[in-house]
Image 1 (cartoon, rainbow, N blue to C red):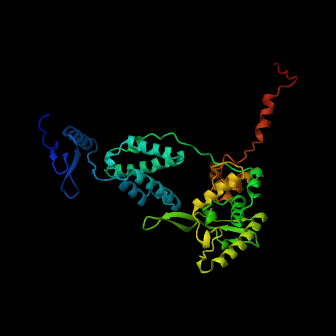
Image 2 (tube, rainbow, N blue to C red):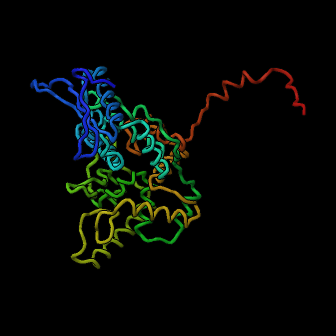
Length: 392
């Protein structure tokens, strides 16, 4: 290969790094200063190839991305400055967890070096770890949108996540308990805490986070009402460690007042008495946060402990494995639907903005009753006179 022409870059061997290094002039910055980009490789041929790719990128995009910007930086920027439609605190918390998952696996990779194959291997690893298809799809979305912004800012020439295929992954279908299964779970011998928790979850349809954010001041045992005003969340603290936080519900439709069934009130009264005894026994060690479903000494309770305990109760009742506390909410919707409640009434009970959300989320447990079809089809399928007998 002959000498490169003016502006085509230079290739030289760096003894300190024991690598071949290529440099190319990529124009001037906003202040008129000349900009140069570097590539490196173990062989001279590979270094020249990388330099050619850099020049091709410059020719196509009119710019050349910095080679030191990492996936962690572009994902972090997107999370720190999200699009306006994603400013909901709940959405940001979910996407924040997703971003940490991406950063843990791909954070140190320079965005200009990220390939669709790397993204596919990362997503396939999530599938092997048992993550649901929806979680994997959301993970690719966060990475894809982060890289899209990086492309806009001239930090990368292509979107590797957009070119990556999604792996086959499990699609978990949520379940609901039948009346008989509800009875089997509640007939077990269990502490007052669990009886009250199951009764409120199934009888009032609260989300798991709303359950653990419920305070005694939200419940009027005499009037038989319960107000849903806040939820428990897991958030990263200033030191990066995950902590538990009680947060007010922002959505007006989520902030709701529920009429509590008598059996649920009885379970809550029993829990109130049991908790008073625990408070007296703990003495000064008790943290008086006023939370109904608290942990030992009144502390906020980690959701993982509730998940493990709920699954154990379902298994001991003979309902099988893999149950999740959120499925008590599905059970609540199913019972209301079977009782003939309208979709509008169910939507209000579960705190949804629109019945469309309720139907889309709980379509598998809402009993569709279509009355008009049999009448309309009667005239089509029936023939006046003798009906021919079916022949074997």
